[in-house]
Image (cartoon, rainbow, N blue to C red; front, side):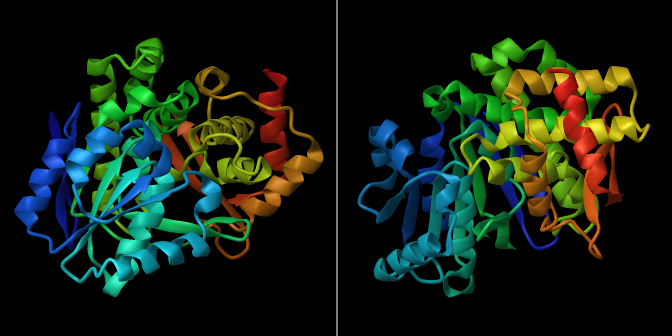
Length: 357
C-alpha cells in the first residue's frame, strides 16, 4: 500500500493506493465519526462487486446510477440531491462516490452543494478516474453540448484507489486510463512516458507492481501540479494537453468512445499542430503518434465532422477573448499554453494524423 499526501491552502488529505484496501475506507469513516454515510455507486460496479461493497456499506443508504457521460446532467444531479434529502443527511454526513469519472464528478458536485458542503470520499474504480479525475477536486456536469461547464472545485476528505476494481474492466477502459497516464509523460517527465511505452503490455495485463507504480507516479505528478495551482489559474492548465480536441471528439461521437482514448486522439492532433508550428521535431511527433495509435483507433474524420468539433472547441473553458487556447508540446516532457490557435491549424492537425494512419 502506498500513501500520497496532498497539501492545499485550505485542506490536506491522503490518497491511499493498493490492492483490496476497501476495509481502509470503513476504518477511515469510523475515525472521522461522520453522522451518516451516503454511498453513490456506479450500477455496473455494484453488480460486479456487490459482496465486497456490501461489507463496506452495511445498512447505510446508497443510490445506484447508470454509468456513462450522458448521465452527467442536471436531472441526475437533482435526483441524487433529492435522495440525500430523503436520507436525512446533515452537515456532518459524508458522500462516498464509488465508480468512474462520471460518479466521481457528479458525486463531488452533489457533496459540494448539499447544505453548502458535506464530507466527500472518492473511491475511483476505473484506471482513468484513479489517475485523473479523482485527484484535484474538480466536480462537474455537462449542460447541453458543453462538457463539464457546470461545476465546482471541491476537495475530498480522502481518496482510496483499489486496483482490485480494475480486474473487471474491459480492455478499452484500461486503454482509456493509459491515455491520461502518457499525458503526464508528455507534459512533465519524458522518462515516465518511456517507461509506459516499454511496459505497455504489462500495463494492459495489469501486472500488479507495474500498475501500482504507474498509478502512484501519475498521481504524484498531478498532486504536484494541483498543489501549486488548485483553481487552474496558471500551471494546472497544462493538464489539459489533448483535452481541447479530445472534448470535441467526444461530443462528435456522442460519447461512444472512452474519454482517455478521445484524449489520445486529441494529443496526436495537438501534437500535429505543434509540429507544423515548428515547436517539436519530426521524431518527437512520431513518438506521440505511435503511442496514441496504440491507445485509440483514429477515425478518418471528414471536413464537416472537424468543423463540428471546432464549434465545440470554441466553448472550451480555457479560451480567452474569443481566441482558442490549447496546450501544445514544446519539447520532450514540456508543453506551453498557446492562446492564438487558428481554425486552419486544427484542420492541419487532423490531416497530419490521417497521413500517418
